[in-house]
Structures are given as C-alpha cells and as structure tokens.
Image (cartoon, rainbow, N blue to C red; front, side):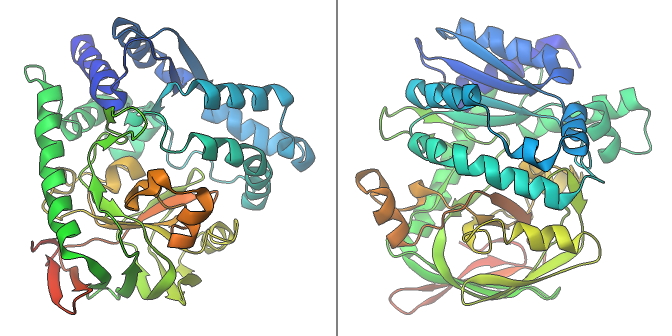
Length: 410
C-alpha cells in the first residue's frame, strides 16, 4: 500500500478517530508486526499537538506462548507496576488508539478454561480502574492487515496479494482514497447516522421484536429514557467529538437488563479469544442466555456466558442495514470491527452508559439501577440478514416497522 495513503489513514485516526486536542497525551496499542503504521500514527499525534505518545506493543505469538507455558497461578498474577500504569492512565486520560491486526484464529488450541480464569483474575484488578475512566476520554479502534489475517480473508491469494487486497477493503470501509477528504466524508456520514438516531429516539420504543426465517425470533425490552447513538460521540466533560469505531455503520442502544426472550441465530462467524466460532445460536429466557448451540467450540461459548454475573445478559442492540458498504462488499473479514458493521448485531455483557439519557449526572449505582448491564466482557455477534424484520412497539401502544427485509423501514 502506498505510504501516502497509509499516512492519510493515520491522520484520519488522530484527527477524526480520537480527535486529539493540542496538549493531550496519546496511547497507541499495536502489534509489533504493524510498527510502520503505528509509527505514522504516533507522528500524526505529535503533529496534532500531543504532549507525549506512549506505545504499547503486543505480539499474538508471544501471547500464545504465555498461555501455553505459564502456570495458571502465574497468569493470574497482576504486577504492581501494571496497576500503577493503569492508575496513571486513569488520572491522565490520554487518547487511546487501538490498531487491530490479529489473526482471527490465532489462539486456537489454547486451553479456554486457562484463558478464562486468567482473564477473570486480571479483570478483578483492572475493571474498577477502567470504570473510573468510563465516558471521560477519547478512544478509537482502527485496523491494518497482518499477513495471517489477510490470508484468512483471501485464502486463495499469495500472501503479498492478500495483504494488498485487504488494505484496499479496509480503506474503502473507512472512506479513505488517494484523492478524497476523509475527514469531510466522515462528517457527512456521522450526520446520516445522527439522523437515524433522531428518528428512533422520537419513537420512544418499549421493545423490539426480531424475526427471520433462519430461526431468529426474539423480543428485547428497552430502558425508559434510553437513547440511540451512532457515529461520533461527544464527551460530556469536554464537549470533544470522537469516533470510537472506524468503520462504523451502526446505530445502537443498551437494552433493559434482564428482560428479553427468544432465540437469536448468528449469521456471521465470531472471533472470540482468538478462536473462530461459526454457525451458532443462543436461547434467552428471563433476560439471560440459558442455552447455546454450536457445531464447534460450544464449550467456549458456554464459558463466555459464565464469565461473570452480567456475561449472560445483553449490553447492546445495534442496527445495521443489509444494504451497507461493508455488507455490499461481499467480504467476510473475520474481524468484529468490520463484520459487525455488515449486519445487525447484539452484544453480551457490558452496556453503554451514554445510551441512558442524563447518565452524566447519575452515580454508577443509579446507572445500574436504571437497567444498564455490567460485565467484564462485551462480545458482539451478528444476527442480521436480508430477511430480517424488526418491529418496534412504542410506549403509547403502536407497532412500527423498523427493519423490513434487512433494511431500514423508517
């Protein structure tokens, strides 16, 4: 990929992704294999006025080695210096830029029970600190192709060709071309998503009913005073806009914790903990996932919904039309950042405070009492298809078509 286009993408991540303000700090999380792009992002952050930039490097191969060779006792330990670093981050509130590139099947073969127990132990330490940062800083997730990810998406191509083709699909999805102004493109796109949110919010929906011929038949209730959001978000503390996900084609809300019934059938594979899970469904009763069905890796799904008390309940409902750029590309990315923007989806686990009207003036307990789910996980899986119909029931007793045959009806 041309370096001029890569730099344009890096600049977009800084200017429109996190919208770094002069004098702010930045943390960039990236794989060592993608250092070239990460270095471009760091340079663009400094050009935008960052007072400092910290690189946090990862390596999926080394992570595999940790889980394979370390004892569970060792994996569950949390070093004091890592806690202090997280506390410093919570105090400083730097912009956070995560560059995704991992092999979607890169952790296959690692003991899932060992991974789960280590994640639970670490989350008990870090989650309270992360909670302090909630809705107080800008963050974004962007992606660049690694060779293994590219070969997963384009298995019939030579590695170099696969990487170049994946670069092309990523750049199309994030609205970057050689001769356009991607910042302006994103401003227009954000306005289109805001218009959909305005229409949904005006309906004052009580619940949504999903139906599709593949077996999806699901009803989920919404929080009184909920908000649909999408595209850019605005920090209540500073008034700064930012785009958490690039790409993003969704509008979403957090449902009422513990009130949903029925069956959801996944329509795209899920990459969870570095393992691809395909062809699965979940049954919900009294607001909780009570059964999962999968041809492979069912145990991993069952462990996922028992990670903590909130892991079996939903934290997000997201609406994405079948007629959207990523869906129309026909490319299966095997990466939730992209595939969730090709189809309607839901997420198990943690909900979003910003989906609750007036959350900025509420305590953590008040937010939970209002119906926002809490969990150490937030795992999206895709349920959209071209036959999906979604009907909304308003609080004044009307039924309104929200989606018809996979696309917007409002």
